[in-house]
Image (cartoon, rainbow, N blue to C red; front, side, top):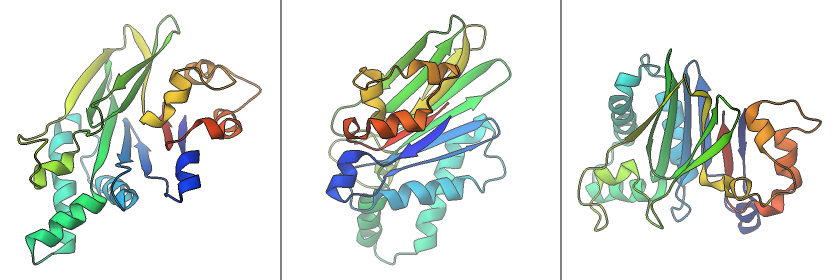
Length: 221
């Protein structure tokens, strides 16, 4: 399942969809832009395009290094002569969550920096939503390149592992899916996560409940 839709609140306020995603091979990747940044939808799309061009993008052991390379390539492309101009670009464009899910032979591995959800289906077909939440100021990777009072130490990715002995599916999602998690939509969404056939499509259910989703909605299962 791959869904990436603009939230109704953003639509009404004239804010572009700040989410973006990329899925290929054993990798699922989501970027979720900061709502307070002017152009975070630019950064989310630049990052996924640059990352998807890396030859070793499917190597989980290279992931953190690849993220650093990707940010560096974007900054180098701009070639700002003054440091304050680069900082301005970062604060306007590059503040976003990075969520990645790798499927390996024996397990699923999720790496993240920022906020969102991990979505799991265990071997009893039970669906769980693990919330990744840091309040109003999530730890975005780009803060490593600018001074902030909130984060004065290097921000690093956190890792969750899910053994395939116990889990048959693991995916990722942005925090825009909260109405699904809190059961605030008309239909039960769990069958779509489980892969059970339905007379409806997951995209159709989200569209029919569009007014319930303020934030942008991205799901990769």
